[in-house]
Amino acid sequence: MIRIYNTLSQQKETFQPLESGKVRMYVCGMTVYDYCHLGHARVLVAFDVVTRYLRHRGYDVHYVRNITDIDDKILRRADENGEVYTDLTDRMIQAMHEDEARLGVLAPTEEPRATAHIDNIIAMIKVLISKDHAYAAENGDVYFAVNSFEGYGKLSKKKLEDLLAGARVDVEAAKRSPADFALWKSAKAGEVSWPSPWGDGRPGWHIECSAMSTCCLGNTFDIHGGGPDLMFPHHENEIAQSEAATGEEFARTWMHAGAIRVNKEKMSKSLGNFFTIREILESYPAEVVRYFLVSSHYRSQVDYSEDNLAEAGRTLTKLYHALRGLVPSKSVAETEHDRRFAEAMDDDFNTAGAIAVLHAVAAEINQHRRDGSEQVARDSAAVLVRLGRILGLLQQDPEAFFQADTGGDLSAEDIEALIQARADARKARDFAGADRIRDELAEKGIILDDSREGTTWRRG
RNA sequence: GGCGCGGUGGCAGAGUGGUUAUGCAGCGGACUGCAACUCCGUGUACGCCGGUUCGAUUCCGACCCGCGCCUCCA
Image 1 (spheres, rainbow, N blue to C red):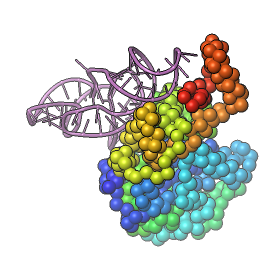
Image 2 (spheres, protein in one colour):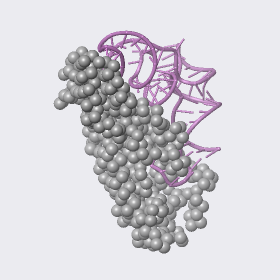
Image 3 (cartoon, chains in turn blue, yellow):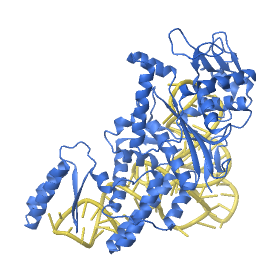
Image 4 (cartoon, chains in turn yellow, purple):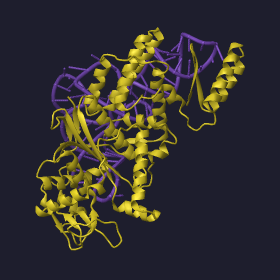
């Protein structure tokens, strides 16, 4: 029995998909005008883990994550760059796919693009107008009439009058109410546009998600996810549009990831303190970044700092050490560890609790190896790799993890040669000479591990 | 101002009405030529004040502090 925290009800609920054995999930993806940052990585990894676990539990997961490839920010950026906006979006989409792959994020089942769904968007707007939930204004824009939808605010727990009192909403003369939002934006001369019954223009931000999600998954689906700052207004507006248009319940469970902070300050575009994924991957192995993200609960706020990443690196290194030089058994029956792992994950995807199980398995492997029970250790190793896969961790060959080229000035061959020289010195009981070589390597970030079978090395 | 979330040992981070989270770091020991790795051992942790209870870090209430959203942002 899986329990998931639902933002709508503000509590954990037993997960019961609409159709037995199937899960339909939609997650708001990227607006592709810039490289993905750590906040995107968090959402990507969080829902990747959700997908992997649900599949592990036997569900057929239909995971849809959209790409917003038309929007004001995209047009502005393309204009600044002096390029056609599709060149910008093509480039950013490719970069996003590279970043995802490096972080071990599996591709979603479907990745619809807004520009490929203009017809659906227009159709939905037509329905909304016909049901008096939307109106075409004199300036050529079409707005959603917030007052026409009774449940407005049910996700973010906001009251319409409070929103209006806030008065930070754009005062746009053409709107009937300041809280109304654009479904269709009329194009200014020379802007990219699509023809519509209300004149040439482009879709508003929120409507594309309503159109794409219901198109790919049906009027009602199981899970809708996204970043923490999308809850309002984006998700609130999606609910209003979709339920007003279809007259049916939209997403049943709403999941929101926690925010990323940088040195105790919120990471955001406006503060300018954001790190792109590729920037971070210059300093840390991708799997370490993933481990860092997965080591705390997806809903909690995490603080990105050098100390925290370094600690994640040390911890992951320890897990890989347990696997080093060991060939996992082919197939191993379910163990108590699997049961405890599932127990943690069943409880709203408690990855921190699940990782504690990984450490227990690693300790068991090390104990068996010490006892010389190689076969039992191999069985445990199989369990560790099996559980790690559900979190998207520990799937590399340990040596590949330890020796990944991080741009140091020593090649693997150089290192092997020095290790041989040190072995010779040790054999001749020239320990001072041997230690000199080890120190020299240590200065370049190479750590040696001696064992009965010989010496292995890693980049530390 | 409105709405929401949170305060756990040196740090990171789960969880629970009464017996171990886990990891990193530290300390002691084993192993080692010495280290590293690993193993064994090691820490009167639950913001403050009341209440409920035989018993609360865990439930309830007040308070203090931090954070997020309310505007484009994952």
